[in-house]
Length: 269
Image 1 (cartoon, rainbow, N blue to C red):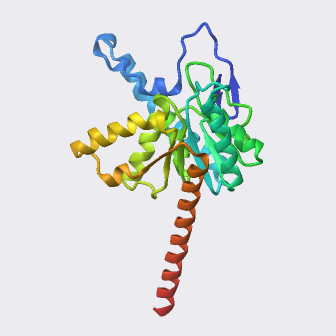
Image 2 (image 1 turned 180 degrees about the horizontal axis):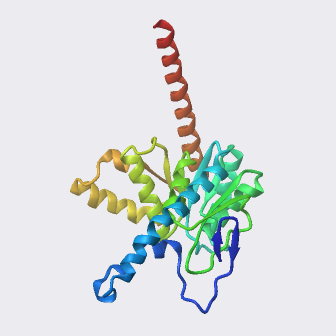
């Protein structure tokens, strides 16, 4: 399925699968051996600047759709998680617990663990949000999404994951989950975003990664103890949600204290 704003059309299966991200990042037309007369480069020079408008429209659509979201948690996890898997049940439990805590749930909108978290939030009466992505293979928005936005570009979608979340929770997942996890971790580490909790659900699943971070990265000095402490690993949904809600409450209290100090200083002046 390909999207153009609110409209969509089913892709012609006789055509090679291609996505907007692929066309944007493809460099084959920069190879002099396949562009002897320079026409491919000229076409890129004309085409790419106009593509900026499409990218801009994705940000506008995302900001507009999500502007009413106040407190939310982004949940990452594998699209390949089966409905009969323990990780799926954990995702449903997590989504429901977050909803009962008054938090909206944001996922990638797809199947597997994403569907599980959306389902838990929806069944608990919470706000269930899905941010879908155009892929070369079929992946539609799951049925448990109340508010969905489809993106052509990964970087626009990732911005929405971060901008509207006050915490990240990672269920077991693959390369996509790792990509999103480490991007969020880097943003927090470098203080590009206000520090917020990042929770890994599943100690056995994430244990090898955490061991490697401690024994290899930490030992080599490429990360610090404070960096490692940015990650919380647990098997308990209650502990994960408690970590998130405490952090949100602490941030709110810090904001109130800062506002009070500012008001007091302004009054004295």
